[in-house]
Image (tube, rainbow, N blue to C red; front, side, top):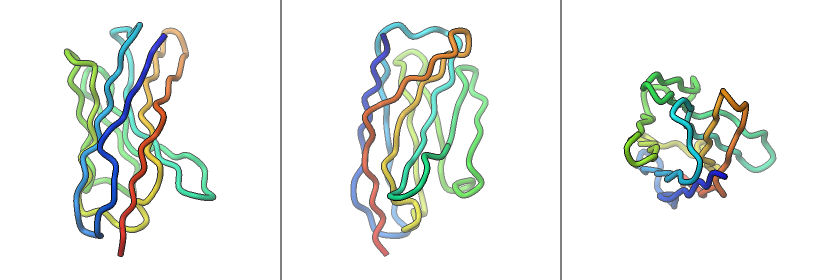
Length: 117
């Protein structure tokens, strides 16, 4: 079983920065993707950024140039540095771990990010 624990959410003014972190524990396979999704009230959950264990990244168009995803494979952690935050970034942010060989998705409990205008 895999457990994901997020930290780092909070309230910030527009233009500010936040750093989210996610620690994974349990049966983690070497080949995996770790990422961040978000869900705003009344909207579907959407991909924010994802990073493969080899370092390849992919970002939602709306966050490119403002957010940076990184991971520490030795510590099984993934981070999301969010700069130039906008009110439309307000959402619950969820850490995700995907193991392609097992086609398994794991989710954290979510952390709230609120950006005030």
